[in-house]
Length: 119
Image 1 (cartoon, rainbow, N blue to C red):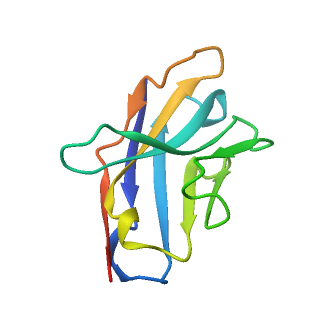
Image 2 (image 1 turned 180 degrees about the horizontal axis):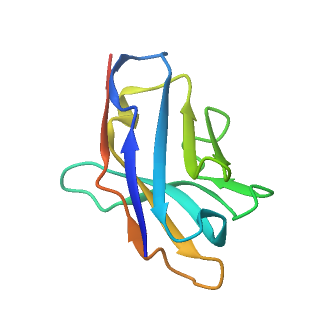
């Protein structure tokens, strides 16, 4: 298994920036594709961004494309999400997730970090 702990959430004004981190431990971090998801009360968890094991390919939800950047440092076992031009609708609990490169679903999840964007 891989264990993950998110950090970097907080309160920011609209237009501001935050950088989330996800520190992983356990199995070899570079064996996993990684993703960021978010959830607000009463709504299903939604995909935000993903990055493959090598960092060579990324994907984003349309709602964050051009504003958020996902990256990883395999030497530090850490996943990042740089969030710029934040909007109130980005307010959510953000989760990092991991899946084996051979899997189709994310099997491992962090505990989440709250991001609140004020207008």
